[in-house]
Length: 504
Image (cartoon, rainbow, N blue to C red; front, side, top):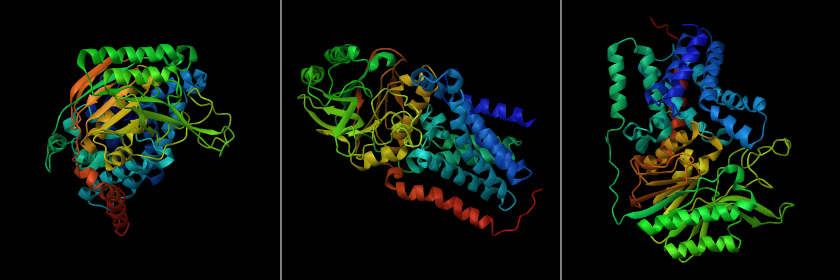
């Protein structure tokens, strides 16, 4: 098959493997690691392996992240001709991980017996997948398990090895299929292993005990074009209070959750809008969690204050008792990297200055509830959920504003990445967004209620339970992540001590 046809088919297969608006076929995502493995094994030189891997990696990332054009063009006001290359630029950076993978697989193909080579491929993939969580601000969006989250049983193994570890297992299976894919026995072996990933082979998660929690998600459906217009502030508050009051009157509730920056004003300041919200908490006798910009005063900059993307907790008595500041900000959206070097780059959000990252992972506590907050795309980072649970969170709450992405693949991809956090940490997860997709997710990754896109809607569930028990992955987190780095290094070093042996 010609190389460019191979790249096209592999890229298209991977796109259908990840969540998308057309048809989602999770196993097709394995065409990506399989395609890279095939490139590595047949390349005639290290340079060819590197370049070919980069081309395929760039193509896959560009197509799967096509939705980046939407916020850059529509809300960043960049002309379409300049916005269209943005996914390509990001894809070309992410493609470097693929090129490094093909280079190292190519370099060890004659130095390792095939079982060890498959093991090395899985370990290397897990390492590179983990590196994407923190290198260059981190963007672990296209992780392989995220494609399978629609089938919770298929990603149950993240309770033991984490998302990156499962990504390595899937990559190793793809490598195995490339080695022996022409035999029916190989296909059967891969299928059996994938099915077995979801079996509770070690300790199953503890069943939640104690009383149920009734919670309400309020999806306000506020148009992003009007959200920050001061003339719409009253209308915005009215939408959220009306939806909350109606749902509470019908069902009763202990917890109401509003999305990221639901209140487009400084909620910490005492004013009539803030008092309306605090009155709602008193009238419904419910704990209220909401997103709004926050600030602290400082003498360290000319403005005299520092802005935060903040989640507030309002008690049933109407008191603001605590808040959480988003720790992992969106580059070029909430802050500009190297802004002193590139002052001409405009942010994608309306505001007078950059947000600053928060520093505390402490949960928001009210009575027996200990809410581990994840704002926006913080849900794609395993370390942030890990830290929240380590500080005592017994329920995870992800508030977001996915309006930026329109009716693209992004809201679905974001939802399925959130599923991984629930399973990894053995926690129920409440996901509340402005325009969807909002959802309740249990500790085994089952999505048991979702909202529609771009609809004002409330979701109510009374089967939530705070959980204290932790997973194997949570308890051995540091050692598992150390293994991501250690195993491929040890196998790689051993490979380079051996003489190359041509395969038949």
